[in-house]
Length: 310
Image (cartoon, rainbow, N blue to C red; front, side, top):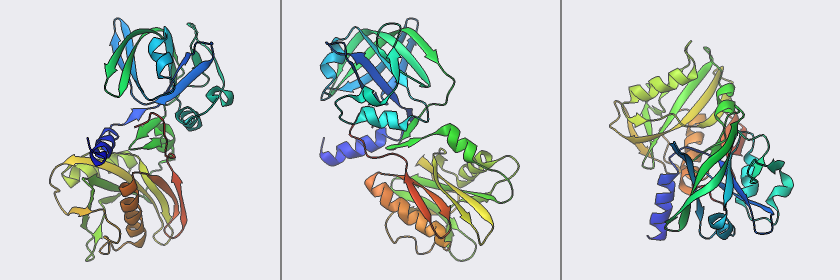
């Protein structure tokens, strides 16, 4: 594949929302080793099997394909720092995390959402990766919400849900994105706007779902992209990034995400948000805006990582 096509394929893979794990084992000297991965899936209940993949370029590759046991640690939503630690090169990734040996010897990281201590059942060659299929020998789940990963960025479902308010002063917008374009509609004042609605008694999630259904395209609610107070209008505005897989809009149309391409959007705060989205979509590095309609800050959802997240 060309470099450009590889990037496009990576971005396409990234539209599948996953959890984040740290896979661990012991090297030949008995020292703990591990790497961050979101290529994790359950396989079978009888026998109990799971899988995770490891790049052949990983410095730990030889140990994992030859080991007898490994563990998969499903990170909790407050463990982004743990994910980053195990995704970057380091002499001792375990020096900054709390862990203990699992029932079968593999390192179990403290405070994770769940862990699975496995025996190596099978190694499957898969292009530039190998698939490790593990037989679950012991496991536990804490009940904590897991850390999510989507389009190159972390998201935390429980924290996002807790942040949502409802009531007459809350407004939601749907950033329905499709093939590098975003859906805009007539705002009734001679300009354009995002699909937007005031939150009712059923809450923000219901309002967002209704916006998507009314738009007439196939789209799914994504992560929160912007939260700001419009002090002049007395509103709390929440915008969700909603990937679309096709369909013809019932009203309005898709506008290409390009810098300075939103002059017809009459709301200044919304226009600035769309210009930011155009730039972030171009580089594939998203953030969340917090502030008001004039000033605020953009918090990176996740730093660029050289590890196994994709």
